[in-house]
Amino acid sequence: MLYQRTIAKKVSITGIGIHSGKKVTITLYPSAAGTGIRFKRVDLENAPELVASFDTVGATEMNTTIGEGISAIHTVEHLFAVFYGLGIDNVYCEIDGPEVPTMDGSGASFAFVLKEAGIQNLSQSKNFLVVTETVRVELDDKWAEIIPASKLIIDSEITFTHPVIGTQHMSFEFSCEGFINEILRARTFGFLRDVDMLKRKGLAKGGSLDNAVILDDFKVMNPDGLRFEDEFIRHKILDTIGDISLLGHEIAGKITTYKSGHKLHNMLCRKLMATPSAYKIVNSAFLQKEAVEAFELPRSMSLAFT
Image (cartoon, rainbow, N blue to C red):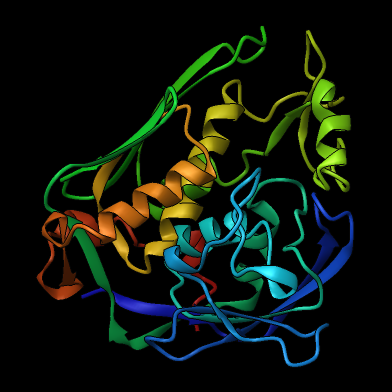
């Protein structure tokens, strides 16, 4: 049986929001089994507590936002991907600004802080969302679908005219260890030619070579280059994990995407949950061993358990 997890102690992390450009601190607290991931804006008087869920997602342009209006919390996807990647189900988050700090543009800084805090098993077992029939969504020439599978598999393809990216494809069978080694460190990316347009929209105000892979018309501008030859598709999978984690359960199903983004991921979540025949909720005690074993932490992470 696989048990729910939280963190062992309070921990904080401070950084710049990639879109807002504002310095922000997020403080994470241990939370009881069954409470999920919850947020509270502490810089606003009487701000509501926000439950992280597919149906509380608001804006999805260039990031995933929880809630709406002044109390919304932007760019949650990288942190949520790390929660899912490490099997953490329950955390209370206080944040003193409008956006989760981007750190280096990947999930690595969050994983480091969570390891230092420690990861604690709780007394309640996990539930899995098991996909039982195909669900598909389309948006222009982009699409995403989820079909039955014994564990979480993400098969993703992107295509850009840029010579460094071109067409990239990756199929990733989820495991905690695989997430840490293959996906966690992949950074968000953007194009120099789009910077002025994004800033006019109120986006990318905090973007820099320190927190994103930036490309001019021909090459990667970051002095140290790429962390993986195909870092772009690996980051797309990181985003996908963060967005589908908002279903609130571990997932047994194969997700295939083509040119997808945050909006399409949320559309897939909403359509899946609006189709009762397409899924069932199963306790980990009754699930196939293969799916449960995927959430075993590697030895280096297990040392952080209390």
